[in-house]
Amino acid sequence: MKVVVCVKQIPDPAIPGELVPETGTLNRDDKLILDESDSYGVEMALQLAEAAGGGQVSLVSMAPRSETSGLRTALAMGADDAVLISDDALAGSDALGTAKVLGAAIAELEADLVLAGVESSDGYTGTVPEMIAGVMGLPSITFAKQIEIADGVASVQRQTEAGYDQVECALPAVVSVTAGVVEPRYPSFKGIMAAKKKPVDSKDLAVLGIDAAAVGVAGARQETVEVTDAPEREAGEIITDEGDAHANIVEFLTELKVI
Amino acid sequence: MTLAQILLFAEGDADGASGLTLELAAKARTLADTVNAFAPAHGEAMAAELGAHGVSTVYALEGLGDGLVGVHAAAALAGHIEATSPDAVFFGQTTDGRDTAARLAVLADRPVSTNNVGAEVVDGALVTEEPIFGGTQNIFTAYRAPAPALAVFRPKSFEAEPSGGGAAAVESVAAIDPGEAGRATVTGRHAEERSGPQLDDAAVVVSGGRGLGQSEAYSMVDELAGLLGAASGASRAIVDAGWVPYAKQVGQTGKVVKPSVYIACGISGATQHLVGMKGSKNIVAINKDPEAPIFGVADLGIVGDVHKVMPALIEALKSR
Image: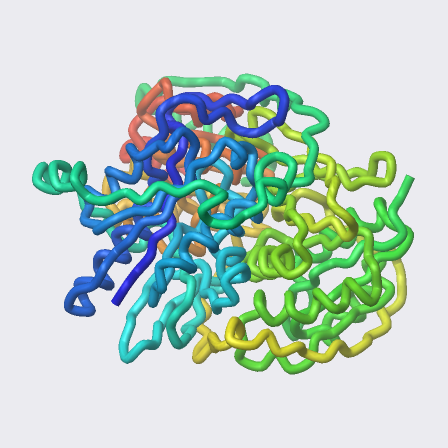
């Protein structure tokens, strides 16, 4: 079985983000790391390959400056190889532009199953996996919390507002994996060393046959007109508990007529 | 200046339209002369309520069967927007809303504007407002692709309000076969038990986080919620850890709540969580770390151990 996992390399969420003033898009000039949201897709792929008695897990990522540090993390977890699409014309791409690029790259890999995180931690549109399926003409099952593969059919528990739906789908298909549904493994030292030697196939737009005008800021066809500071909440009262702070809560709730 | 027509992606069930759908109807009325709706299911059942909220015509998709909503609704919508030329299509940020908008974006080759909390019309273009960086800033984006603009909105961004209209007209829309892309089928639907006040509309919400220490301690959240007639919620950390089901998650990837009182117990206030609850009218936070970001949004912050403060609070409420 061949599983392709989409992974995004994002600016470190622990460092406050900033916008590129000219485009209103996220500044990605600093080092990029593996989006934690995608570590669940990688883990799910590794578990499904193991359950199938072996298989190939390939990564696909689109990133500026041929960034590979996030890919190396996922390779160290156990993925076999990676495709990296990097091209200056991709800066400022929106979800649809990203899906066109990832879809074209994945189409060359002949995957049985394509996995992705439900949404990235920086852009969180939650639309790219479904768009990739659209671009590739594949079925998709989003918001998966459990995936089983048997006889070429994926059985998926898909999270809904009310609970979950059981969904069946013959492969190939795109499935997006909800954060938290598996425990991503920590790369071992051996894994980290091995990851340095695993193949990363770099591609640009020309190789994929994608018109630069369909992607990037121009392809996004949206214009940032204004960025404003959100009104801050007024600072409240902070009390250190000396054993009777619960009384302050009771008083507060009484004032609000909750009790 | 207004648009001629906005089409709502209307979700609901046999009992009527969802709260989020009605919120979008209220906003759409202020932006367009005519508001119509496209319902992937339950179109007939929602017609009276949607009409009362200003919708003129409900286009009801027939024959969805056990197919997934996104791919089937988008296939039908692609032809429908060609035929009826709406200026914008509004979706709620639900699982099916996001799926449908994403599929339609590919079919119609248009961008989708997501995570929106506001919208206006400027010089004939839809301008949407999206909170970024944990809600500390808002970015306003003008849609520059050909109509219709595709926009997805977060729950609780607008107030639902009846317009006093009669029932909406209902027109059937035939399903379009999406081909191989439509071969996934739903073989079972499971609803989690819903008892007591619901997160979406409770006046008071009590939520717990990692600071509770272990899953058993979540019972304090349930007990406090019970005493206050409140709904119980959770941070993503303890949902990911498997302590409580996803349905209880408050935050970016969970539910957006705006109760009159939100009580955060052992929640540090990661950006992920804050964006789901900072619109609450009053916020109480209990956390042992005085530097926790949750105190930045709290009206009453208690720096203390939840294992001491919560039992004392529960006792005090019981003895009243």
